[in-house]
Amino acid sequence: MAAPPPAEVVSVAVAAVPARRPRGVRPLAMPGLLLGDEAPNFEADTTHGRIRFHDFLGDSWGILFSHPRDFTPVCTTELGRAAKLAPEFRKRNVKMIALSIDDVSDHLAWSKDINAYNGDEPTEKLPFPIIADAKRELSIQLGMLDPDERDKEGMPLTARVVFVFGPDKKLKLSILYPATTGRNFDEILRVVDSLQLTAKNKVATPVDWKRGDRVMVIPSMPDDEAKKLFPEGIFTKELPSGKKYLRYTPQP
Ligand code: BEZ
Image (cartoon, rainbow, N blue to C red; front, side, top):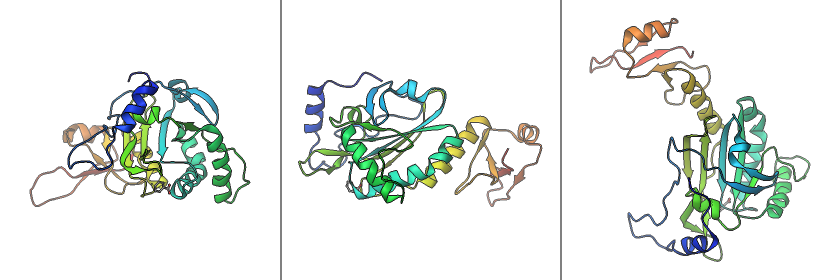
């Protein structure tokens, strides 16, 4: 992806987001990254100093989650939960980074509130950096602005986007929620487990799957290959169609 757009382009792009969208018209592409796209190697100021995104990710998995604004209630609960779950993300070799459209000094002051919300010492320290994007340059580059959610000045806010990147820096998953709906960070951990499992093994995870549950054999795999690959056995559910596509195997 290209370098961040210059300031003039940003102000024109932000101003161009109409207050009411005609049905079916998309003023800014959301989301700005598609599965398989490489993460842009942006530079940004964060609460942990200036970063270059690819260096920040290193060889790890990465999760980038955006927030509409600092000092807002839903975001505070989300970042509190993200901080509590940081050891779980660390165990899975996932680097966490948040983004909100305020500056570093606001982010640091807000971090105290987030720690206090968690019942911890109200320090400026969180276990992950928060990117400062007061000019919305990165939010525009990443297609995160929600045309329907505005601040008091009528400027568009960022939606609640989750991007999960693999160690190859390619986008493996994106989730897009509006500002008024908080995310479920246990669900984000769950999908990371699925992404990491299915990156290593030729399996898929069924509805509501959690670590340790049985998994599905992928439809493109012939039975004889599946039998060799999954020595613990395959259970095929009989279905009215007579088609043998619902094949389970224990989690490899
Ligand atoms: C919040 O984080 O509470 C929030 C932010 C923007 C709009 C609605 C809610």
